[in-house]
Length: 117
Length: 113
Image (cartoon, rainbow over all chains, first blue to last red; front, side, top):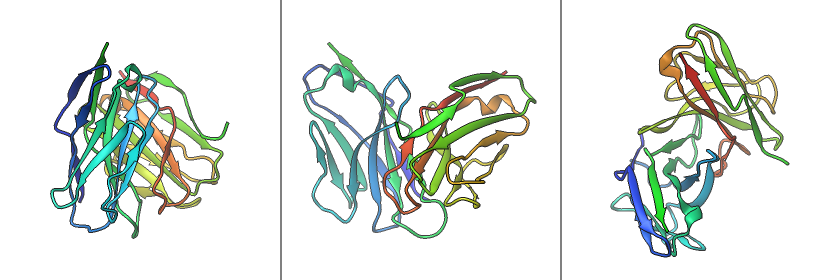
């Protein structure tokens, strides 16, 4: 079974600076999807960025980018020019590409990010 | 506005009582999911449905049941609530079971006392 580990329960960063959230995963599959979700105090789960394992290029969405190291099974999220609105719980998630059963997302434990003004 | 609606938003429930959490989506998504979120554990899959009329067990199904009578609705029932079921529950959907993007409801905070 796949597992996702976020080893940083909490992180903090000064506004306008850059922060990197760590995520590692364990799988025997060669093709899969990885995600970062943001959960602000409103509880809403918001998709931040997605990475297909077969793509070598790291995904980027505006100030959010990932460092995907497939061999190391690492998928970190970099937030540049941090803003107060970035404060949230961030979840890393893994998804298998297909097959039978539920195509469930496997989530990490979450990292709570605080932005200091 | 298209999306997923969960009800209630929050609930305090006496142990031993029966409770149904409601989930409705208007996106005509085939696949639907129920997750529970617990501090330090992330979100874990309770039950899922790949299409109307079918359901399956996830990672933590004990004490919960689901039904999928139609495409739009996917209720989660706690037959006899216990304090360990205190959690935040999220309903999610995706176009089909192979879709990469899942859409989440706003969650239901359930406290069992």
